[in-house]
Image 1 (cartoon, rainbow, N blue to C red):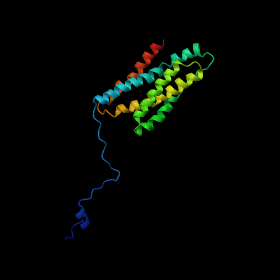
Image 2: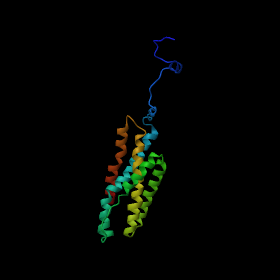
Image 3: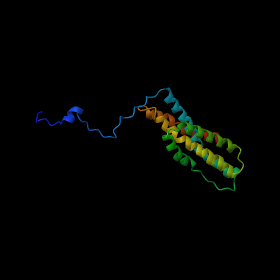
Image 4: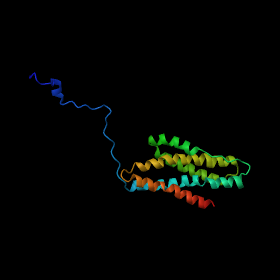
Length: 179
């Protein structure tokens, strides 16, 4: 053996040593850009945000009706269950439960609005519109927004622009329908 060689026999047998950190993993694959499935998700998010924010923006019309005609002796209150629903749905979405979140949120939202039509007392309005609909909208909001980002890289801004256009459209249409 040559004395000028700096490699040991074990390094020669194993080959060159590459310094890699143990936590280095290959980057995740990029999603397919668009496609029918991704654009249908954008369309469904548009309709979900149309309903969520359309009814939220039209709440002033509901509140005016409640305080003037329906429940004049009760002071107005508001529900923050949309935010609480978002706190619940975020970790569940990350765990992969987005289909049950969408199904449960859709059911609670529709059921809450249907029960609101039957309400005759304050507690019934609170249960139907405040709790049931608010929780349903909260379960729908986070999955609807985050599912759009999975299908786009280059056209993500366009996809989000189209999807979030449902919120102001719902606000205008629901307010006009409540007049």
